[in-house]
Length: 563
Ligand SMILES: Nc1nc2c(ncn2[C@@H]2O[C@H](COP(=O)(O)OP(=O)(O)OP(=O)(O)O)[C@@H](O)[C@H]2O)c(=O)[nH]1
Ligand SMILES: [Mg+2]
Image (cartoon, rainbow, N blue to C red; front, side, top):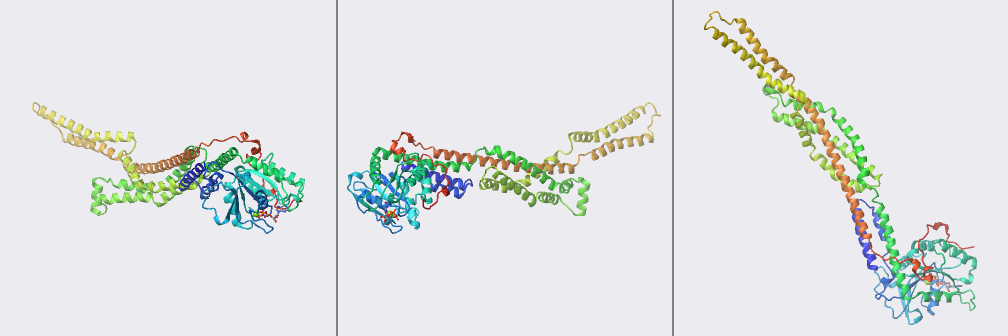
């Protein structure tokens, strides 16, 4: 069983550090796992049949060591008026019991073991601890190390110090982890009001009918109000093998519950809703705005770049002209357009995109996504946004130039192209027909004659048949510059779509990670621990258990004396 707790804690820690590396958990959240306890009393022993571990716990001078000595019937632990007296753990155990190797953090030099042969206490291992509220830090640490190894904590107070803040806080913190017995020692100085008051306090902490003993360990011979005998009988009655096993398994269940409550807390860091559902609409409205801004920001550069593309097509005369002027070659024009694209989608353009992506990451934190978790996948896409931007723009422009104008314009232009040679050909055909006809008629009729008028009109007809469609063909040609401008705008839209896709991909990846972490956590926490209902336990034991500690303000209890 203790192995189960160690593995559980170990798996949970590995899982948490992985989630931390991916930005889901803070360092502090990962450290919260360390606050869970895996130690159990059973871990102290080699054999399954072990004694019940009973520990005296309380402030300095309340009489813990004196009580233990009284049980032992000899001075096992050092008890005196010096404060604090005990600086070490004193174990009083039957010599038939073998205590296993103690955990490394246990300072052996601060542990004294006294064995005995008293069969009355064969099934009890007594532990006297230093005071928990000691001025000495090491005393407090020693108590903290040992506490998880104790089945039954005997919470000792004195009539003047039962409202101690520190002890009460510990009781509330560890309440469900142990079984509790309560002793008001120094009862030679106590009165029943204090007993009732203390009982009320215990009830408010979740103990309905606690075992509370008032003991008088003074040197006085006459102790009519001393309940030590009943106290001893109760402990001996509890030290039964079956109860010890019940206590052990309950202890494990409580520790699993504690680990589970920490893991539940860690789980809340991953949110409850599907991230794609909450983040995608957020991103889309955010990006729509940025797309508008980006398009507006480059609009003024579009005509200049479009005219560079228009320059690429100058026709024969244009080329001749530029050659003669020795100005531009085709390669010059190409490098001009390349530079033009770079100028259009420059550093400022991409900085604006990155800034918008970062803004979105910030907004996502309002949906419960840790900033580190979302920032990492978004940062990863940033370099790729720039990678293919240039070729995307070029392709969009080339595509637009390839189909300039509207479909109607293109059809008309193509028809004019046909007319450019069909009409002159028809004119030539008609003129040719007239010439051949006159020539044929000339064989019989010498008067058949084509005047110079015919020559002039034929020339004019053929000229016009060529000129008119040709001029219209040139004039109605769809503008390459306009097509380039349209392509540039389409390219910007493509770039924005690429960013959109990449960010949505990152959100999807984030959501997949989230689901994976949650599934792994559920898998780790699906440990099968049989939970015995505390109501099934013997009545005497039930009286010692706290099911759930109510949310009590510790500050309400003062570390002062009761008046
Ligand atoms: N009058 C009276 N004195 C007691 C009683 N119990 C213990 N004492 C005395 O109180 C003093 C402190 O007792 P300890 O047993 O050393 O107290 P402790 O709780 O072990 O103290 P630390 O080891 O410092 O944590 C000793 O001098 C005891 O003799 C009691 O019931 N009545
Ligand atoms: Mg002591």
